[in-house]
Image (cartoon, rainbow, N blue to C red; front, side, top):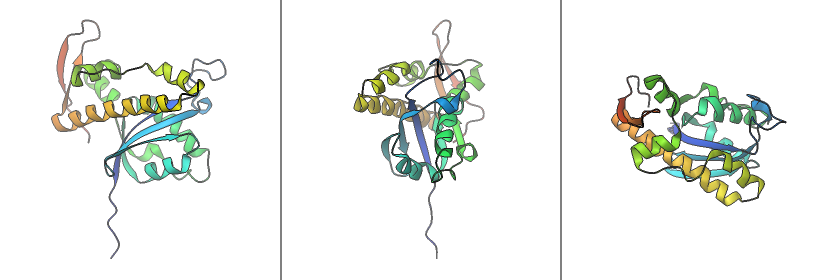
Length: 194
C-alpha cells in the first residue's frame, strides 16, 4: 500500500533586487526582475520559511508539492517572477505555478469592491496592525546587505497575508476601508475560494 501524500497550501511573498521602474528593467519585464528572498508559510508543516535566491532547490521542494498558493497580488507580480525563476533552471522547470490553485487576496477584494487596496490598509482594518515598511524599502535592504532585515520584512508580509487569509476562509468576509473616505465596510465574498 502506498503512503498517503498530503497536499500543502502555501502563503508566500517574494522580494526582488530590482523593480520595473529601474532603467535596465522596464515596465512589465518580469524576466529582468531578480529575486532577493522568498518568504512562505506552509499549512502542512505549520512553519514559516525564508529562502535567498541561491536556495532554489530548497524553495523548489516546498513549492513542487503545493496544491494551492495564497498571497497578495501574486497573480500580477509574485507568480510571474517566481515562474521565470523556476523556468531558468533544469532542476525546477517541472514546477508550473500557473497550474496550481491560486488565491490572490487583492484580486478577491478587487472582484467584490471594484477597487484595489494596500496590504497595510487591509491588515489595519482587519487585524489592527500595519506593515512596518514599504515594498520599495526591500530593494534598499538588499542593496545595503541587510539580509536579515529583508527576511523579516518579507516574512512579516507573509504573516499578515496568512492572518487575512485565515479570516477570509473562516468568515468568508473581510473589513475593507473605502479608498476615498476611509469608512469601513464588511464585505462578504460571494465566490470564496479555499
